[in-house]
Amino acid sequence: MAKKKLQKMVSKIARDEKIDGKEAKLLTEQIYADGFVSRTERRLVGKLLNSDLCDESVKTQLSEIVAH
Image (cartoon, rainbow, N blue to C red; front, side, top):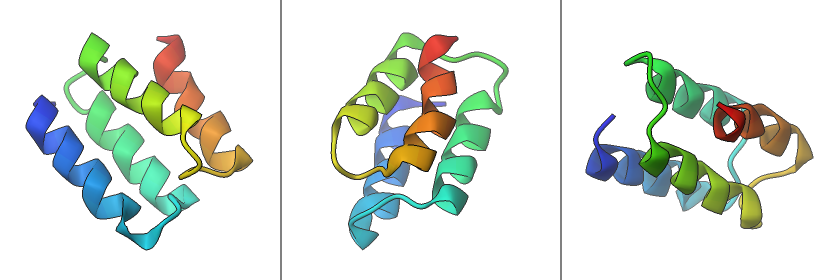
C-alpha cells in the first residue's frame, strides 16, 4: 500500500480519537492486501502502537503486523 494512502487512512480512522477493533481490522486488511508488509507500513503501525490511539485489544491485533 502506498505510504500516502496509508497515512491518509490512519488519519481518517484516528479522527474519532481512538482506533476501535473494526477500524484496526480494516487497516490490517488494507496492509495485507498486496501480500507484503513494507518497512514503512511496519513503522507506521509501530507508531500507532506507541501512541495512545489504541487500547490493548487493538494493540494485540496490530502487533501481528509489526512481527512480520
